[in-house]
Image (tube, rainbow, N blue to C red; front, side):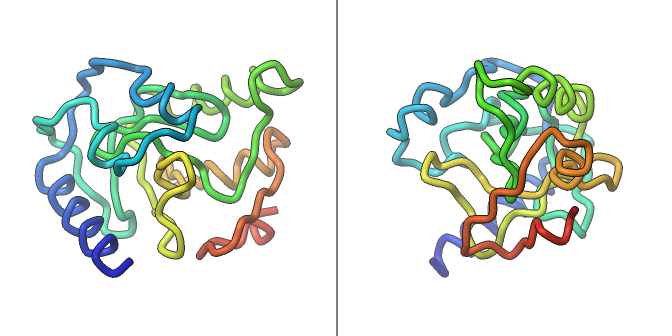
Length: 170
């Protein structure tokens, strides 16, 4: 666990120094692996759309990572350059085919798609069982996870261990 933390810190520093690009080579990176839970590698290794990360995006010191959100998977999952697939921690939005799915997905798209987001990665648990990075997503200093709850697009989904308490967001 300590090695994973160190690796994440090193990768975050590399991303911060290198920045990110807006090139989108594949919007469905790891989608099948994530659905099947078959991905055995870190999403930082296998979900980054462009290995030659290079841009002018600056990492805000209060975020552990920043990057361009190049794809919104659904209301609680996005793809971020330099990080890979990100699962919004502490919230759960409707799945495809369920009532509210499209409105939650559209809201997240309107907030972050094509924009640079800040990520506060969960220090207690970095990845979920599908190898997605667990994080609070910020856009213009707005906590997107909290905003989904406040606007009724999501419900609280607290799965310990987590450094975040989504009950405090409502």
